Amino acid sequence: MKGTRHQLRLRLLRRIRRSMDTVVAEPVQFTTVSGYRIAATLTLPSIPGVLPGAVLCPNRDHGQRNFFEDEPIRPEEVAGLGCAVLTFDPPGRGESWGPEDFGGPEHHDAVASAVRWLRDHPRVRGNGVGLVGLGLGCSMAVGAARVLSASGTPAAWLLDWEGPCDRHDITQGGTDKIPSMGRKITDDAYWVPREPTHHVAHIQCPYWRLQADPDHVLSDAHRHASAMMEAAGPLQWVRLNFHTAGQMPLRPAWISGGRLAANQSLLRAIGELSRGR
Image 1 (cartoon, rainbow, N blue to C red):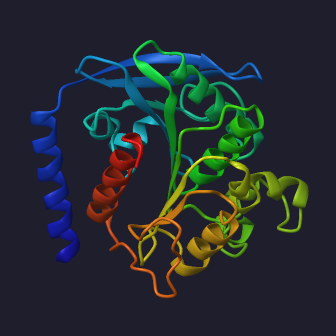
Image 2 (cartoon, rainbow, N blue to C red):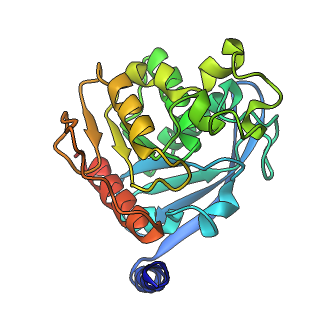
């Protein structure tokens, strides 16, 4: 009953938001460094002036359409916060060119290219474009943030919603073979580029982890959240849920499970980050 009530409340909230916020969405394209053409959608609020931006990285197997079906936030909701929002089909999905890469280098390239494209838009503040990684979208978001950092143009911020931290989480202890694409769990050449814990310390931008208990997929929410926070330790600004930045309490206050809590916490965090925390 509680889950049903929350679903109904989320539907009502989305109806209210739609009636209050006017946004404009248009299909766009950009090209990765590898040369793949990426299908994307730019969603803008109908307010004047230069805007902060957010690139939304979808979960496993997901593309643009899933933001209206499966993902906990929708682009028009983020645009309603006063952000320019770019959603896209990662390589190997939807209408984009290229191979499926499950958060590997081709996906890093695509996300970094998305950030560069959005930065160049005349309505967008170039130094104000952040990244949102949803679930396994964390792998491509964190990898791309490292690519941008290495080029001397780090993202404005990175928000990670319940992303798996390493190969064991990504494959759920080796039981989920799809993201491995036939590789063994011991294949470091394949797995290291896809493990967010290897990249997050190098992103040179604020990192915010949102974690519910229970997690939307994994049973041990504590392990992968703690692993990501520990790996992000060298960064100047790190935050877990709505604790004070820089704190990792022994007993964190986990977000409640379910889509309603995920939707509300994501929008709250994106709002704070886009306004400069």
